[in-house]
Image (cartoon, rainbow, N blue to C red; front, side, top):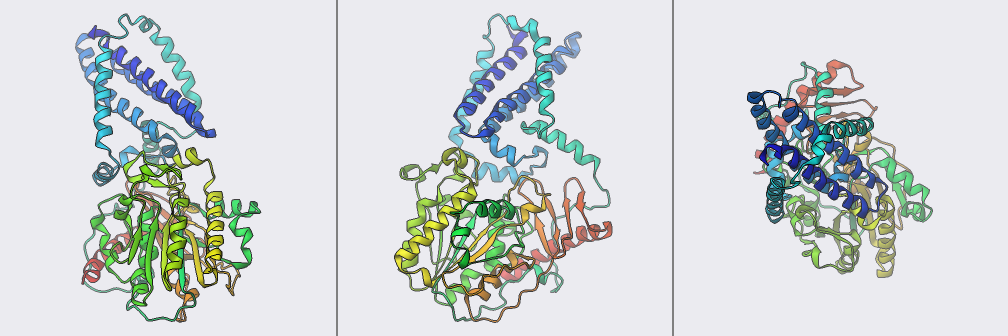
Amino acid sequence: MSTNFPFRITCNTLLLLLLLKIYFFATTPLHSSYLYLVSWVQDAFLLMANYFLFVVCTGFNRPLSYIGLLFFYVFFLPICVLSIVYTFFLLDLYHFPMNIFSISADNFKFFITYFTNFRLVGGFLLGLGALFMVSYFFPKKPVFQKWTKHIGITLFLLFIPSVFKPFINPILHSVSEEILLSLHADANIIKLQPPVATVTETNEFNHLNQSFNTLPNARFKYNRIVVLVMEGLKYSDFIQKSLADSSSFLNRHKQHIKQYNNYHTLNIDSYTSLMAMMNSIFVPYQSHLSKDKFAFTDNCNNLVRFFNQNNYATFFITSYGKQQSTFVPNANEWSTSYYIDNPETVTQFTCLTSTPIEKACEDNAVLTAITDTLAKYPHIFAMQEMVYGHMTEWLKLLGADPSAYYNQYFNRLADNLNQKGIADSTLIFILADHGPKENALDLENYHVPFMVYATNITDTTTNHDFLSHLNFKDILLQTATNLPVTITPQPVYILGNSIELVYGTITPNGKYALITNRRQFAQSNLPKQQVLKLNKDFQKYLNYYESLRYKCNR
């Protein structure tokens, strides 16, 4: 029986994967559900290619066949495990493709710490063991083995059309991306090195560190100041869809809204984006790494500390579970915070509990809590980190487009404030933490919506200045206080998503450069010498940022 084991385990894995894909295809009420079936073709091609390459092609020579079997198992195990695991996150990975060769030890440690459910891992390993055991005995007579060549040819013919779209299977995606990136590598670009703290102070990076030197006392124009942070929306999508909907918040309250249409995030990660907003410092690290590299930033002067000093209650609220407290900027500074302790027990609202780090209920679940809290305090600064759309599963569960969902939420909040009688004393900032994560080389994903709402706002002219999260503090002070604030548009540094280290710059006149660190690839409309200068300057900024550790920890 064991002589046919490679064929049996391959066939049984393909059958298991097919049943799994059909289940998700049938239970996913989205147009993109067909991707599950396409992904099976790619998975099957990879598994059959592994069988042909190491079993069929080496079977003509006995010594060579033993080596072939060894390599079959070496490659089969990761292909099998990855093909099963990624199916559960397929739609998210399709929109946010992951190059497995770019995953660092720090990334892997983060994933194991925050994403892994060890009960599921144990169950998965038992299931994998059962698959191997069954394959020793079933099918007892592998009659389909004589059709191997026909099956292989059929899979190849089905596989060909799928190469004209981005690969869904992460192994195929990663291999193809590695080949393409290697063709464009530039040896003149130096890979970033671990930072070394600079000894002397420098003004070179003042535009990337606009935190308070000292915390001023201020007179405020509003008793209640609220920041609503949407999840993962770029400017063009949100604005176009909002303008096309006559009942959207943007259309319904346009006479009370000031827009900033040239506003940018610095990081395509939520945690570091929020840190830049609250602390006015560019964080040159990916979120999904050890926090030791950048957590010290919260010790610098920040907006939460500013409001605390000015006798405002400070309130952080989210519909995430308590696990999110690990990724809240200035976590120890907020005077009060609100999480949904047990999303699994909430029945009135839709909740997502399949992944430990993503446990959350939809944003509507905390709408009453935020309005009640705003009404409770005479002076309060509140920030809500919103969750809808962070995982594609939200679309499966509720079916609402994120832009439409957020517009409805803002309308309900405005109505609730009116009912509470506190609308006229409330100033609301609405913006996105970052744009979509799927392409860190797409500048549109750094351009995010930002608008300010108040029933008695006096200036509703659209601001076209090049601004970013580093300017958020000054925009807030300019709008909400009597403090004299001057905002000068300046170039910014930016950083891509948590898997592939991409860094770069955007300038007020539309010039930009983006560098993929691992593959030494640059995409830019700047002269090459300026790109190479950016490469060196970013390393200098890493050193400068490291030096802030001592300053902020004093």
